[in-house]
Length: 145
Image (cartoon, rainbow, N blue to C red):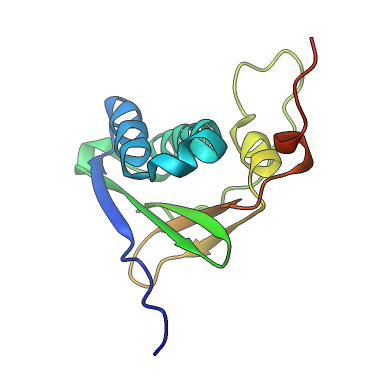
């Protein structure tokens, strides 16, 4: 008999800055306790960056747009998809040292084992990022003071 996968967790939040904190809390709460030491901080940062970008660049607040999140484990990774109704394609920007923003996808690129941008079948865009469930060498080495 095949192994039955977990059902993905799904949320919808208003396209409002207050939703960033709510999304982080919801995602953190759904992560199994055993994975929190390994993935918690990185997943928290990924959630913040992707939801913030979706609100700022992919939604029109006056239309009461919603930001959607899906979290699921598959193929040795924990995957987070953040979707918005926008049609733009997010790209890594090279912000100069004076810029106060524009580094979100650089963080995503450095944290995620893999990430991509996909158009949604009906309307909008999804950014999907995966964190590896395998420990890295730095996770196994003791921290030296």
